Length: 162
Image 1 (cartoon, rainbow, N blue to C red):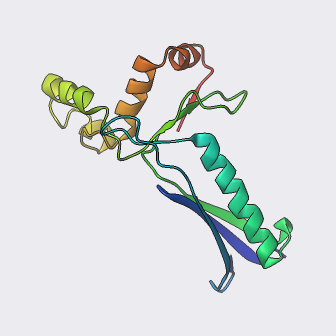
Image 2 (image 1 turned 45 degrees about the vertical axis):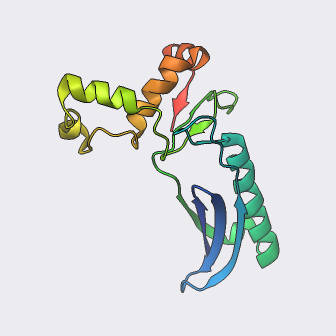
């Protein structure tokens, strides 16, 4: 019977993996930082491929250091950056660009325009959320408005967003 639970925490500055037994005792932890990219004032980006590589590295390191076989892990829980957003090709797994981090404010003008047109709470009834640069909806709109390849892919059903 599998006796461990793994946790992967993909955070804003690093990715870590931890291994617990069924009693909650920690058996190991591995962590790797990833680059913060600031291409313009107010913009914060991450390289999605670097994050994917770091995730694989910490899981491999954890398994090796603790000395467990993957089959001994019953489940894996994952946490992430929540509102950090990226669009990618489902066939290749390649992103169309860098991930736009939750802290990024490049959509401030879009959010202000949407608020002028329909009020700050215009989406709250449907989503339960206020209009803000933090959330992923304005980020998706920005990507589609500013990346022609991503827009074409989305319009043809060749893009995933998360």
